[in-house]
Length: 499
View (tube, rainbow, N blue to C red):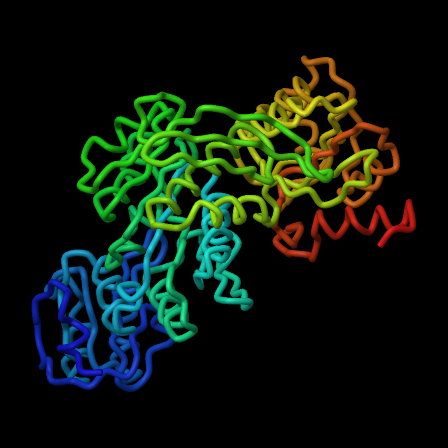
């Protein structure tokens, strides 16, 4: 592809060289440069790719995109680029440039599909899966991008980021177009917005679930205001915004929006208002029967429990309705939805049920346990731990939530990383012990799960939380295969002889 074609939607200044170059690859990892590459220098928090420009020139790059002014580069680097005849382009923001260059490189695949972006603190994974389930019920061919990876048809690809880097997004977009995908539904993280990963994508629909303090500090957001402002960027990148008006941050999210706003919530004044909800158990499945009025009347049974899943289901149903999906497909899609590791009922035998969920902080644990309480179990049993090398306040808060809402807590390990599980459990007890609730400490997570199931009583709900969809246990920097779901089913097999 010629360089001029790749640059057609990118703001740049030609520093030296010619634009009349054939480009063989677009890369932002200096180790992947080859003859004819266009290399984009990303100034990261730990590594500044500008330092590798001399190596990039020697390895055959045809052109480089820099963010720093030419004269701020060392003389050695400038000489290497000149001697190799490399075209040098300067841009205001390299990450933004990478996004537009990637879109052009893959021939703008996202423009060839309906694109739905879902943002918020909680519920992104669940809502995207719900929308995909509805679209499949309507006969559409949707693709999925998010925390659980990328799904194209029956093929799954693992990813490390909720919202992958812009090049990766466009790469998978091209694969989706090739596979006949007509709609892509993606989780849009605050970092994905802040660090320009979704630049170059025009969203048809943007969806807001809720907002609470998270991802604050470190390399992400300095404070809540920055976190919220990053989330709100989605509604300047979409044609129509569908937002939870019952969240206290709703007005801040729509304040600078440039899209059409559609609200949903419990207020009759909302565009779609919740008029009735019943918590029911159907065929051993915990769920919610929901009625919505407003622009259109919608009725559906969401096969996932709790008020927060009512709102998740509303977000999905309203989005589908705005897309012109028939109500029968919405009803079918929400009744059939399964979300890996999100309030997922792994086992039920009429006597007790076992649920897996990703809840890994105080707020999510409290919300989940409150929800399960509403189904009036004989006992609510929770198996949980906390991750190592993370804010210890999360341990206190999870301990306090478990102590307040569970009848029995089995406190165990999570991803202990470079800490000892026993030390993390000791921190959990700082929040747990003042509640006076019943507990058992079993550091080995496999044994903790087996203990919970072997001591189950009729009418119990057992919640194994913290890891959800994860299939590993990280200890001393090494990831070992471990799946809560697999361990639950293995425990049932060993104890009850069931497959």
